[in-house]
View 1 (cartoon, rainbow, N blue to C red):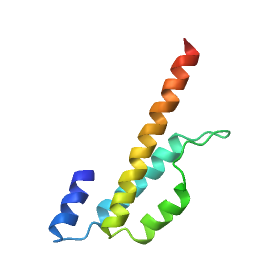
View 2 (cartoon, rainbow, N blue to C red; view 1 turned 120 degrees about the vertical axis):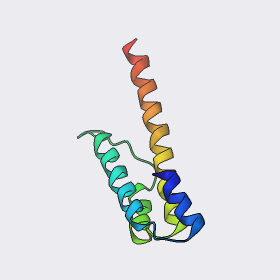
View 3 (cartoon, rainbow, N blue to C red; view 1 turned 45 degrees about the vertical axis):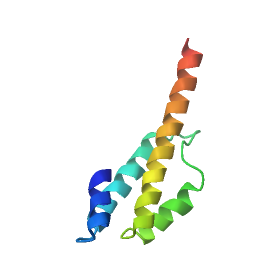
View 4 (cartoon, one colour; view 1 turned 90 degrees about the vertical axis):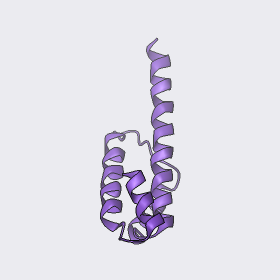
Length: 89
C-alpha cells in the first residue's frame, strides 16, 4: 500500500484518498491491537498527527506522516517484544 500511495503522489494522475483511507483504517486497527486496558503503545503526539492525516489525506505531507507513524509503531512494538523476551528468560 505504501508504494502504491507513493506512486500516486509522484504521478499526480489520481487521488490517493481511497488508499490513504485504507492506510488510516489499518493504522487504527494496529493501535487497537497494541493497546490494553492498562497500557497503550503509540507514537508521540499520536492523536494530533492522526487528526492532521485525516484532515489532509490527499496531501503528500499526510502520506509521509502516516508512513512515519507506521515506522514509529514498528520500533515501539519491536522494543516491547525485546523487553518481554528478556523478562521471560
